Length: 311
Ligand SMILES: CC(C)=CCC/C(C)=C/CC/C(C)=C/CC/C(C)=C/[C@@H]1[C@@H](COP(=O)(O)OP(=O)(O)O)[C@]1(C)CC/C=C(\C)CC/C=C(\C)CCC=C(C)C
Ligand SMILES: Nc1ncnc2c1ncn2[C@@H]1O[C@H](COP(=O)(O)OP(=O)(O)OP(=O)(O)O)[C@@H](O)[C@H]1O
Ligand SMILES: [Mn+2]
Image 1: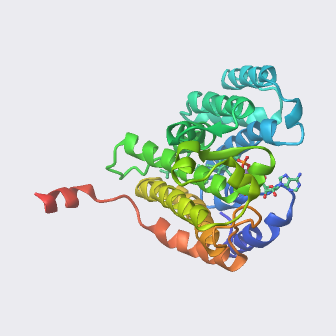
Image 2: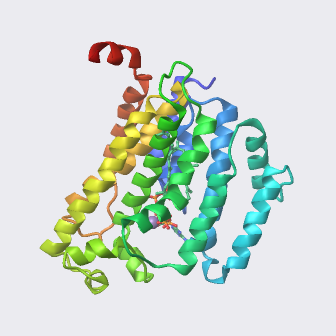
């Protein structure tokens, strides 16, 4: 068991050192360092899932993205079947093969994430929120569904398994919606608009307004609605975190609190997500970790009491 001092170093590393390395992101920090309280076996499993997700995302988002064809994604999917059948291709695959042999992880969310990458290759506009929700499920809701079997539900939890999975799904959706709202300008420069076209039109806005990138009152009002919806998904997710195994609650709260603050930062930037990148400053990041720890101390809801009171 690493000492408390070692853990303190880890926390400092998580906030200060790690983000300086190339390509290190909120979730790479959390899956590496935020999982310190988990057993070694669980940490390795989360890391293996993280690496698979990152590699899948890199296929369509990374340096070789322009060479990626639907055929390449088909080959990646075949490789996924091999991983699940215990025939890994490289050492990262081997880590995932090991994970799926130890935990009851279903292959479906992995297949769905690849489907999300296929969608990204052929689609750059979303007509309405239903379409956007499906995209968010594919690329991020799936992460929640992959993680719960490893993180585990607290043995004393009285919540239904379904409600915990729903909360996990909601956290993925909330994170992805937030990511989309933060990256509007960056995505537009790649010719992509991940915002519901019907809602843009209702607000009197079009793609051209996004490419022009001028913060107007129409844009502010539109953004307020989008932020409110993302927050609703975070609220939904919160209900499930306390039902997880005690050691898994801290990294999940950390991820939730850190990512949720990106929405506050978009507001603080006066909704300029065209040219300003919303981020959470180091002090706020550091303060979020004990806040997450405090929340993680709270375990599952005592449903019996609530039932008695309402009777
Ligand atoms: C503890 C914890 C958060 C574990 C999950 C670790 C894990 C397996 C992460 C994988 C993330 C990943 C690489 C996904 C690929 C697709 C993608 C890029 C999605 C976007 C993430 C952006 O992350 P990034 O760190 O790159 O962000 P920045 O650019 O630096 O801002 C997403 C926005 C979505 C990621 C979605 C999640 C992490 C879902 C988390 C949900 C759970 C862990 C379920 C928790 C359970 C309950 C009951 C609430
Ligand atoms: N080649 C690179 N060099 C330096 N930093 C990079 C490079 N590629 C990505 N990054 C940084 O890594 C972080 C994550 O990058 P990326 O945009 O691929 O992730 P993402 O926002 O999660 O993706 P998406 O929005 O498509 O889901 C960003 O902060 C980005 O600035
Ligand atoms: Mn992004």
